[in-house]
Image (cartoon, rainbow, N blue to C red; front, side, top):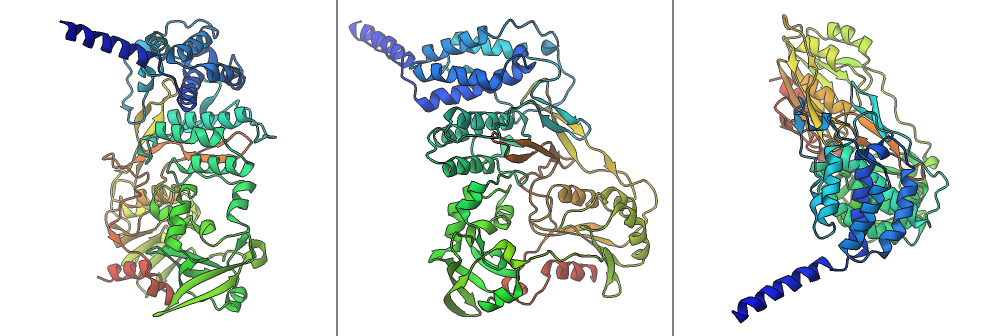
Length: 549
């Protein structure tokens, strides 16, 4: 009996100790970010814009700092919520919705975290969820409801941001984190759990010791969502990587940098750089190691796109020279080469003018990056007698997909499904059927349809490829695409720094994902080092080979 009593007492006092466990600063700030963001989008009085919500955060932060236990913390939140006014019953909220929801992003389970919140607070937050704001929010609305674009409105930008202001640094993190939490359609695909990202980033924002540290934290935060549409650039991030460039572009192959072109032929020649040189080390550090060290600062949905976006992290620096180790043929060399400000190259991207042509007398070729809608009928007429047409989408097309589909498809086709954010229930997304492409009737173009893609095929390029894939005789050749399908939501972070996210979810009709994965590939072809040396377009060559079968 004594043993049972003792065990009972241990359990009781153990629970009491747990209830009074001291909270860390990171735990308190994590909770505050979530409560602040939740109230911003859910509480009727806040979502209406009745409060300066940034100032509300600044006022509550000193109180949060003084809290030591969950009871202290919960009381601060409860008092805060009480000060915001009454909440009327939401009859619409309790009615069964006709929407078909995509719920992989939705997560309010943190409300029931009994380490941080008392049962009273959890019940209060649940009540707000069940009686959430309905109507046009002060902070987010559809800019174009037809395509799902969001406009994040009425946010103070703080153009003259003082990085020393700890409150503004935390606001930067909290605001961005909650936008992703409630309105990013692919949150569930992020490599790191989004809650864990918040926990990891709080010390970096709270303890930034320099403006550069703060800006790198912002860059890391944006990169962490694994979205090729996302990006962040500032003078401080540019300074970190350096303003001096080598006069050559490159492609990462097997962890090494293979030179593919020159920004300035004469400057490259001066250091005897050649197309196909395989650079293995930079300043005695392996290229692959440099990439991995900087990967947290390189945006991209997948490794293919990150590798393409790594250009400024490998060779850039603050000095006008850099040492490289490189392979040419079967020999390894080591030398120091010059770096320059990019403007010194006088570089101009070569303008392509030939929208379509015939290859090898029998194969059509269409440059989708410059073909306009008004050109489609002429192109298809000129190429109608070819045995195949190659549609090159290793670029950014100009809205020609639907028009082309009418020539290469003999029926109307579903080619995508889409998820839109439900602004009446932030965090949830609604399934909708996409538009169809093609027309019912006799097939106008009866030859093979070959679609070329690679890591530069992004967003509308991926969407266009999905349209053309519905063709009766279509096949896709190339390598993994950028994995950033859908539209783009633009907004400004604190300080006026511009960034973007993918705004809607795009899936194949069978709900196969395109984000991060890229579109479906039938025949994979990647450039080789020898192909680069020989100035070959190996993807196009494979397409021609397929056309000639």
